[in-house]
Image 1 (cartoon, one colour):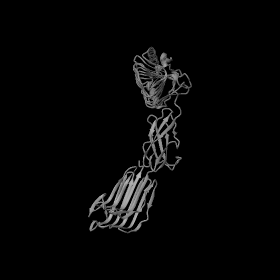
Image 2 (tube, rainbow, N blue to C red):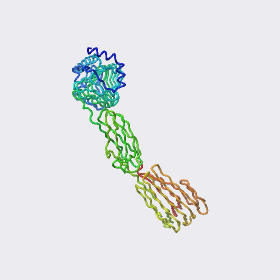
Image 3 (cartoon, one colour):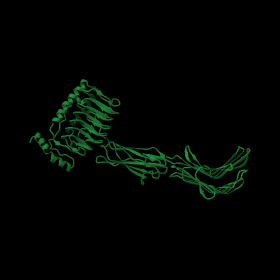
Image 4 (cartoon, rainbow, N blue to C red):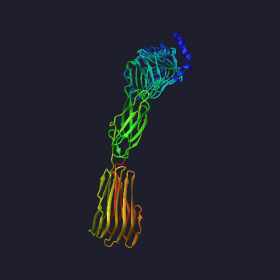
Length: 541
């Protein structure tokens, strides 16, 4: 049986062959005499890119070889793209090269088909040398392996009646002995070809119309668009004389987000380089400050899907302050083994909040015609507390304060919590009296103020069991007083539950349970604060 007759017989047995392909491993065992012959390229062999109507580029594309267009004249995008060869715009060299492309296209289209793959995706297949044809379009999703079976001169020809499309990150690779670049792979495309983003493509494309090679893809083999345009975006394209090296071993590199205050959001991103068009997922593990060797249970675990060659962990809320470690693992796929970034290569420092506060029982001053009548400094007073850790500061309560301003059992306390950040100040006075000069006597019982601040905000409260000014009873029983309640009795101004926001580097709130002021023509002045508490926090996310 002659070779041509056997090839025609192969076409007639397509249904049985297709069924076998779908039910068995995608490795084709071709007859020993099956072979493809690469069409002669003539002067076109010097061109890495040759368009019919135009050549356009976006981004830092690198073309190794000549670049030209004919009969069109438009070449754009160089720079930012670069060409190691010569640019030809409808000059004799480009015109002759297009004529040679036409000849090569005709030769390729005229070869007899060994195996018809119509309706099948090339992804996942392993194909020995031969002529493969598609009655309509061809699709590549994943990795196509071309098995030279030990022959350095093995050749493949793909005859595609309409279009060729490869998905993002798909790849064509040579295995078992074929030369990386000997013009041994030809793609004859009846209409247009599109190489997906991030893809790795091998072979010369002879497209009757146009070719689009999308962002980040590379091609070892020339792009010949006979009547239409060649469109590029940040690619590497080479003739076989300047071959792009095959992909190296798979590696993973990571970029953690910057440090944040405790309670802030952190994240990680991973880039997977090398390998054969890696796809799938990356697992991100975040280890807390108490696990610098990343050997314990992860503080958080997330999974990101590779888009192109990158994946993201998504956002994670960092807890207590300290140094956190991200570890990213690419989980591998059918063509690539897994790989993991080392512990310690991507740290994130989470800083503490500054927790501050102050509380005191009472302070008072009074003057008459410039002479001091009363001068009581804050008592008892915690002083200004500032810390990054959990703490409690409690002053000894003052049993008795006597004089024109008198009081019993005055107490003050400030408590801080490191995470979640919180500062709480409290001040209390069991009873107090103010009897200065001619102003009405003020009597108070069971006075308490509280100020609490977290990174979400501040709040304050004041309770008073009894308040009387002269003969007027203002509060007869235990009452939770509304903020900034202001009353004036016989020339005495009282602000109850006085709340003063703190702004600036720190944010917080001062709460004065009772603030008494008297000003008679600037000659007699009184200022008394009873049960003052202040809480604030700096460095919130």
